[in-house]
Length: 416
Ligand code: GTP
Ligand code: MG
Image (cartoon, rainbow, N blue to C red; front, side, top):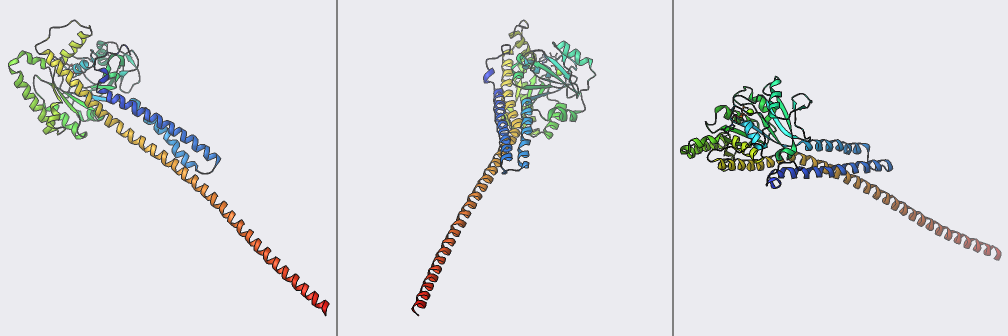
């Protein structure tokens, strides 16, 4: 689509691993669907004409039709899900906006996000939102409207509001990435419900930490809970607000090292979700606010603002994070989403093959039996023929003897 916001790396983006795998597995299921349909038609035909298969067999294969449709349906909805957590005001909504290259989610000082917000691609050109438990589309065009719409509703913080944003406005949405923004982990005591409702199907978690302070116990506890429910969740740690370091350049390296060590310890020693080497690729020092401003001005939406020292380095690091994130999420989603489909597809294909094999061997058996019967008949005829011949031969001889006997007797009688 012409209006899709493109970056030079769009088509070799790691997200393509998922996009291509999804297309491929979808094509395979189209083929499986054809095979199932053809097999059912074929089985019904031979079921009528001859009596090789019974109705139960046809019924069993017929159930695969609905199964394949079900899988295709789930497949069409399969996406890559990333969930953002962290303390209030650390910049979760700002990070998402920077990744989406637009001010989509409300952000601001104080406690802003008061429920779960899921942003996903909409097939239409108009953005809209859908509240939990409803199917109504509420039109929204701007962040202001979105914030207003969310304030108007009395929302509970575990509730989910889905924001559908036009796919052609962002490549991440076009490629089926779904973002979940959350209220601060320090706000809600109901973390278990959050995990049950919003985290179990997430492919990647992003912990948005505040580089001006340090990782907090509430943030750590939340991820301890997550990792007891999910085996080795993929967690990225963003030390956001790193632009603050520009004010204290003399401490920059020291502070960075301190954050880095603590974050590595947390992932490797506490959560035990990855190795130290892997953890290095999961921890970034960024400024979401700057990244979003840079992107908005790249697109001419705002005039360039004077940026703090070290902006370029932070912006590169933000882009580096995006690349590593894309690689991680697409690989993880292919595995978690498609492994099951592959197994089911393989099961259906094997069942089809076994059914057709059975029909073939049964038909072969019937054919062999017929040949056997014919041979049997043939043998029997031969035997009767032989018997007949034997009998005729015997009869001939008997008659011959009788005639001879009669002749002898007659001539003897004549002589006498
Ligand atoms: P809640 O929704 O309230 O939990 O907050 P949040 O984590 O979503 O934070 P949000 O994105 O709303 O950001 C809070 C405030 O911090 C906003 O005013 C942002 O503009 C600002 N902010 C976000 N990221 C940065 C950053 O990297 N640097 C600076 N200086 N400010 C930032
Ligand atoms: Mg927020």
